[in-house]
Image (cartoon, rainbow over all chains, first blue to last red; front, side, top):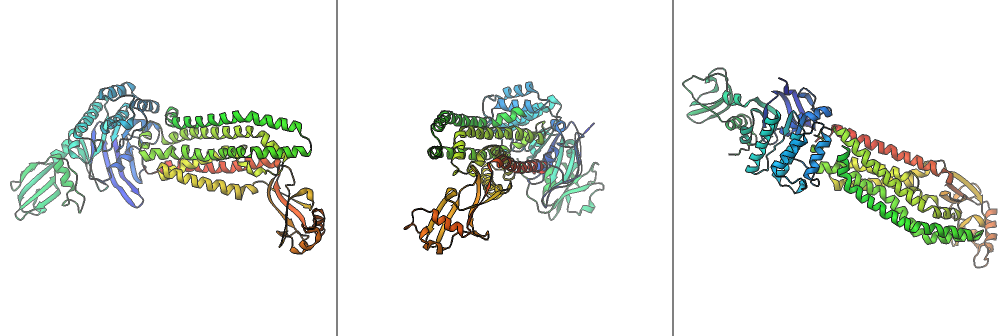
Length: 295
Length: 337
């Protein structure tokens, strides 16, 4: 299967600050990829690189086998719903659909109209007078009806209320299933990703910490609890993600693809959120802002 | 892309169309009367009377002429402000460039279509305004050739091809500044300031040198005298434009050695010929001045140089416009989203 996103030593610098460094990614097509990380981790930068809005400072990036944003054909293959879900405030919903039709050779007008109708958006209403959720849906409609092979969404549900959020993600998932669309969406809310994604990329301080199918993430991370002990006393073939100690007890979050039989340790499974937090808590990296988590 | 550009430009285009219709209405309402008055006046006058008629006619309509000239001068600035500056800045301000640049159209084509359509409209609006006002002013321009006191320099910027060049420059300037400020209002303010500085700088410092000027040195004579003034510190006088309709750059007195003098020394003032309380006729005084070697010198452009000046200045602005457009594409290539 073709690679959705392949990055080698990808880096992006703004002036003297590196927003992304040394990113290696190899994500197969056909996935709904969740990009998670704290604010300022470089998520938006990565998405802007994938959509060709930015050019990389170092390294190489190919999306669906092509250079992002190189020409109209590549632009047609990738849809992007940017963070603030931009729409033209003074243009009506119908105008937006016409805009999509005029600017995209693969435009699916039927799909767009059906979606708009089902969402109950008034065609004559100006986008500036829609609610936040409706505007997000309109932006999503533009992205989907363009019929891209990959749809990129930057924090699509931020600032939506829980109901609108669920509706939005549901609509997205339905569309992805109907049109065999690959999706890449970023969020700092793990719970959103858990429901929608089957592939996870964890970004922290401009670096890729983890990139794997969701099932694999759950299957290969374990929490070990036992009497206080140094990491060297842990079973072989595991990587310590996070460690915490009390006077008598040690708790380790480890990455391993082997079963753990050592009776010294009590082994428990982790939720996705626990795994992500384990990677991001200060014990696993020095001084970093706390992850925002919706509980 | 053409539809999208038109849809976003529609309101501005309608505003401009209304402006043009209003201007057209004013010109159509007043133009025929203006031409009629001139034609009848010319038919009835002869010799020096025609001179007098032209002077009166010009005085009568000078205010309207100035106002319309001002309209032609203001149009390019307005186009730069209201069409150029928001073109990209509005998108960057609202974040809609991220919508526009993620359709199946490269951002280069996006900008190229916008520049061509809106820029073309700019040229059309400015050209139409200038052409209309020029046509309206034909009798006035004609009269000012009879009465050489009205210099060519005054209306130069509102005639011919330069208004089109100004408008394209102002438009490209607005677009480029808008890309840098990413906000509409600051873009408009900066565009206005830079455009005014460019207009003023080119008009005052560059335009006189765009074509070789002519210099004439003429003997002092009452027929070629524009003004004459005797005061305590000496005599000041200036010669008239030596060629009808010429654009006077400078005029002064020169002494026998050819050096420029502002004031003819006071010693002559005590000569009875030049004392206004004794002599009413200045001819004797002028003869006296001429006998001492003083002459009138003027530097000017000929009316026949009008088009050369026009095209050279338009070319200068075109180079500036091309540079700005080049900058816009370069910036688009390496901009930070």
